[in-house]
Amino acid sequence: MPINYDQLMQLKSEGEKYSYSERDTMLYALGVGFGRDPMNMDELPFVYENGLKAVPTQATVIAWGSSVMGKSGINFMMVVHGEQRLTLHKPLPTSGDLVADERVTGAFDKGPKGAVILAEKTIRLAGSNEKLCTLTSTIFARGDGNFGGPKEGAPEPHQIPDRKPDVVHECDTRQDQAFLYALSGDRNPLHRDPNFAKMAGFPRPILHGLCSYGTACRAVLSTIAKYDPAKITSFDVRFSAPVFPGETIVTEMWVDGNVVSYRSKLKEREAIVLNNGRCTLAA
Image (cartoon, rainbow, N blue to C red; front, side, top):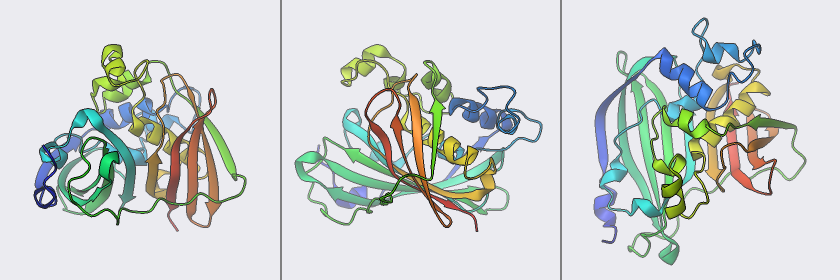
């Protein structure tokens, strides 16, 4: 059934309640690779409750659950997560009670290629109603083009500087990392079930795109941000290729004032897995 553009643009949810604990914060950090070396005193605060810190990209899972996209009518077997944008209005606490509002903000018809749909989720602290963060996800629905919506107007990707990177950092992934990351919310069998992965066209399960995204944040956080999560106020990226668990993610970074441009590739094979990355640092 084709997308109904007018109905799609009216989709929203308000006042959804969520909560997360210090245990969830430590589990997320482990899921994106922190704590590999138990003697690394810089990473210890992300995986240990004594002086605990939250990884900024944990914001993508603290209100994980029902989504307005479930009512969109798109074919989820053909869906790819295209881009993720995150704005932190204040540093992420290590636990909290939350209220989230979500709405569709754009839908673009790419003809036989599919549909590009933007959804925005605003997360607030339940007690004070202070805005904590805003998440914008771009979904590429490969089976849902030709629905009669606008063809142009989707956000333009951030451009990577045309020079050698200022910083390069390697982050390993474990063979079982998708199982660990899935405990933070995304239980999609594509990342854990070999039979499901083959039906989707992959030789084996792939790592969650948002796990690769969190791993890139780990790279920026451990180098340019000097392990201070409060320095990261936004973190945007375009997903460009899958990662198989066990591969090494190499993140290249360019620093221009308070903007860090980044992209991530693989050490073991020729592939750029994250591209057009933009991180904003606090002044």
